Amino acid sequence: MSNTFCVTITHCKTDPDKATLGFVVANAAQGSEKETLVFLSSDGVFCAVPEEIAKVDEGTPFAPLKDLIDKFIKAGGKIYVCTPCMKKRNISEDNIVEGATPAGGAALVEWLSNGSPCVAY
Image 1 (cartoon, helix red, strand yellow):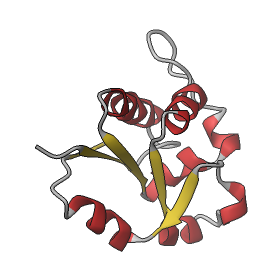
Image 2: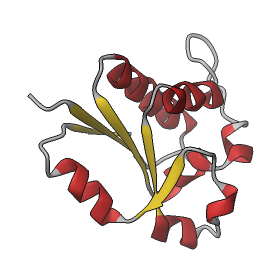
Image 3: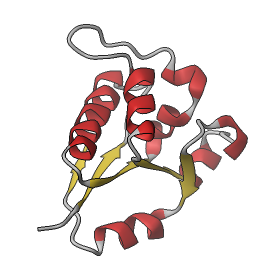
């Protein structure tokens, strides 16, 4: 069984519920001692932009997205942000949260090549 886990998130502005749920699952995986990666692509790259993160609060029983992301990073989770998706949306590296890393699809493939299970939101 793999000791790694991956969550891909492709929504934020278009479906904030999926962004929230993706980070809920990522925190659960990280809390289960799985080395966890969140890969943000498409509209999901906005989950790395502080101004957009602050807008997402799906309400009870979920914590605000900012709190979920902060918890995930503090616990050692990794966040990769699709570089071409950032460029398409005019998001620069200096406009993403500390702890997130711009990365291409090859970084995701490398993570998954070790047998990591992956879920998508």
